[in-house]
Image (cartoon, rainbow, N blue to C red; front, top):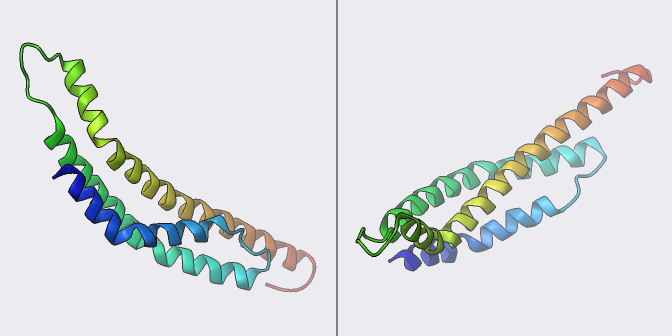
Length: 130
């Protein structure tokens, strides 16, 4: 069941995750209008990535619950925890990938806002208006 949940999730969303990740790999244009257009595209993906991140967090929680070995006299708490971490490592990796994509969208948006504010300030000082 553990592997099937992750497989189903990835079968359904892997191509989309790669697509958004690919968009983030491109440098933002320096010109304001193309920069704004590219940012609109990225920001449009943020909500879906956040939803996928929430879904992956839920799957990770379930996987952690299902993979925790039962307590026995012969199994230490360290053994149980180590086994559990091993069983859910791929879930955690994909959760971290989704979190990284969402954080990258947010960082790129902040950078673009700063760049556009800088551009506007220079236009005012150069006498071009706002």
